[in-house]
Length: 357
Ligand code: F6P
Image 1: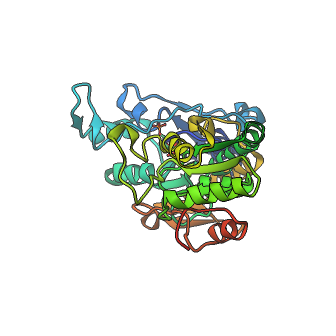
Image 2 (image 1 turned 135 degrees about the vertical axis):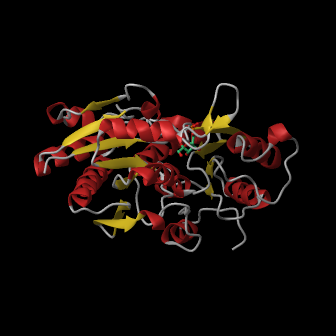
């Protein structure tokens, strides 16, 4: 039976979204002869009449698209249908309008590409429609439960690592402490992975309670041993956890990189500079690993719909594509394991994690 499925990208963009949309569309077309409709701007396009969506032409989804950053469908992380921000500053439940928009599209299934928040919202939105939903995990934060990787994460780690590669020579040339603040919310995956790959001296992540005096002591030890520069990676949500901030404007967790650089400079006498990597980690050309992941997950998502399976998320586990119930994904978050391989590796390499070990 010919079917018509929808695909949308929701939440913050990341590298590999176009490759994901491409894989879904190609699998639907070549594997099953189905039509794929691309919904615009996550669920926001469902509020317009006519609905903002268009049939995707598989012939136009070529390799050039797979390597493009961003999402050509558009996305949003500000349009919760159940608490939609209105111009008067209030929030409103606009889910009924979106459901009506969905019905207008006459879909037989939907592939939602998003993080756990987006997937939770989509699941709730689709409930009254009984439309089969399959999720594909994407987020540079890599915090989606029950998948080892989400689309976009590997590229973000590569970018953060490259940033360290570039900061190191400047730090060494100017005898400075270089602090790199990376994204990743409170998960810490980008910080620990890039910190190891980029040869950082200090990595600070939210799941480990860290202490400024430990970091200061480590940097001071490096300087005493003859190394005048140091590389520090701090996750954006790794607010210093045992010291009250001096003032609201100086609050850790809100510009923690700048805050840390100032404190390290004051305490060690070293010159320190902070770099906030920000959205540079998101809109890049996906590295091969993310294109592969996007392709494998996109194909499997369509295969699930073809098998009549729904309310599931495709996932990467143990070098394989698998699928898990959305119940085991929504409302959960996967942070860095404090006893896991990466933390153990960092410690073994002499990286200071700022905690009491
Ligand atoms: O969830 C992805 C992410 O990039 C986080 O790492 C970051 O904290 C946040 O989104 C930034 O959101 P925005 O693009 O709305 O500033």
